[in-house]
Amino acid sequence: MYETTPESLAHLAQDIDEPTLRQYLLDWVRENSILDEQDSPLEIEVDTDLVEKSILDSVAFLELITSLEEKTGQSIDVTSMDPNDTLSINGLLRLVKKLKR
Image 1 (cartoon, rainbow, N blue to C red):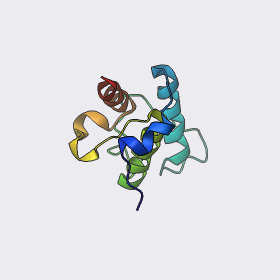
Image 2: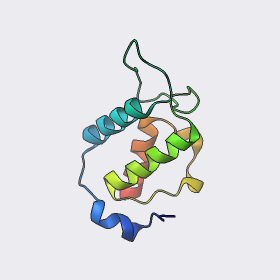
Image 3: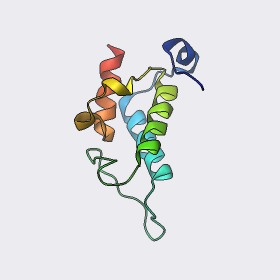
């Protein structure tokens, strides 16, 4: 199994601004949502709890974290994440910002 470490992500890091990262996350969620949205595009607010609203299941959410790690070059320890704060787009953006410090 592939282990995500800071060293393994270093070559992937991109200097990405917050609006670009927000759009990347929104697009990723829309493309990977478990909801069947054939008739209309999925509308997601940046503060929507992606798991509670059944937009992503737990596996898809972990895939989103992996994608976020690859996009930012930041290793994210999901065991230390506060699910009350990080299950939304804005929560993930705050987490990335905190990791960059």
